[in-house]
Image (cartoon, rainbow, N blue to C red):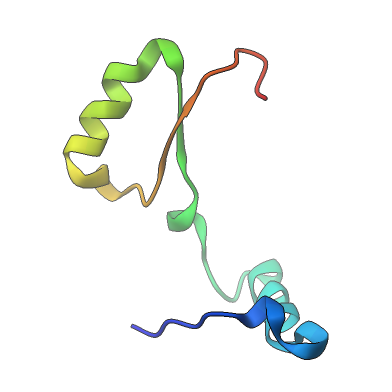
Length: 69
């Protein structure tokens, strides 16, 4: 595993722009990093997934507002 930090503070954002290009072309898959979104009325399901250490989900989100905000 490699971890990089601070790429958005790099002058000219060269590494950040290169990463966006790789993601945009599909050379790097990031779907596993996207959060699972649960509406508030499914909070029990969201908590169950969190208790199971994500069941493959890197992040879990509970949507409070019904209009997606």
